[in-house]
Image (cartoon, rainbow, N blue to C red; front, top):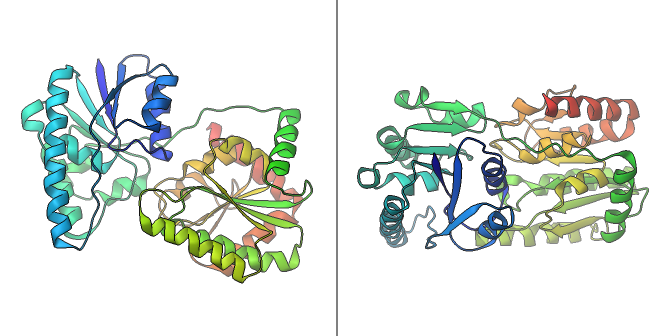
Length: 362
C-alpha cells in the first residue's frame, strides 16, 4: 500500500516530528511525503523517505471578510491542485497530518476518490467554523486519529465517534548512560552560559500565547528570590504568526522588567530536545488546553520530572503525584509551589524521575 502523508506546511514542529517518526517506522506500507519544499522534506530525504514537492498555500482564520474570501478561494485552488496530484500519483490512501491538511485533502475527494484519514493533532475550533469542519469530516473521512482523548471528545458529531481512534504520540526511547548524561549536562550548561551547579527549569515548545510561557517567568521570578542559583531556559521559537513574534518580545520585556535577564535564557529553536532534558532539572508545561504534550514524554524518558498544566491531554500522560505534578492552568502560586516541592525534596525528585521513565515505557 502506498500512503500519501500530506502536510500543508514545510515548517517543522511537534506534528511534523511525529509524522516523520511514524513514516520512518512503517513496515507494511510505503510512505510518500507530500509537502511544500523546506525543512520537512529536507529531513524526510535525509531519513531515506520518498518526498514529493507540492505548491505552498497558507491560510488562517480571520475576522476580516475580504481576507477570509481570499483565503477560502486560495484553499479551494490549492485543494484542487492537490487532488490532481493525488490522482496522478496512484497512491492508495491519504493521511492528512492536521485538521487543515485534512480539509484540503477532503475538499475534492469526489474527484480523487481516495480514502482520507485526518490526524487530529490540535483542538478543533469551536462555533460555526468548528461545526462546518465536522460536517466536512462526516462526508469525506474514512477515519480520524486523535492524539488524546481530549482531542477526540472535541469532535462531538455523533457520526464521527465510531471513526475516531486514539493513538497517543510516541517517542523513540534513546537510553543515555550516566556518563553520557553528565557530559551533555556539562556541555549544554557551558554553551548556554549556565553554572554547572544551578537548578535549571526548562519550558520547551513553540513560543505562542496559548503555551503561556509568561506563567513560567512569573513563577520563576518568585522562586528566584528564594533560590538565587536557579535558571530558566525558554526553548523554542515564534513560528507561524506575527502575534507569536510579538508575544516573544513581550516575554523578553517581562524578564527585563523583573531584572531576570541573566537568569532567563531564550535559547531559540533547538533540535537536541533529549539532550536539553538531560541537562535541565525540571520541565514546566504551562499550556492552556495542550492537545497532548509530546515534550512531556521526551522529558520523562530521560528521567526529568515534569510539572504540567491540568487540561487537554496532559492528565492522560501525567499521573499527578506519581509520574509528575499537575496544577491548575494559570495558577501561578500553585505552579510555584509545585516547583518548590520537586526542587527541595530529593526523594520526590527521584521518585518522579523513576516513575516517569516507567510511564513512558508503558
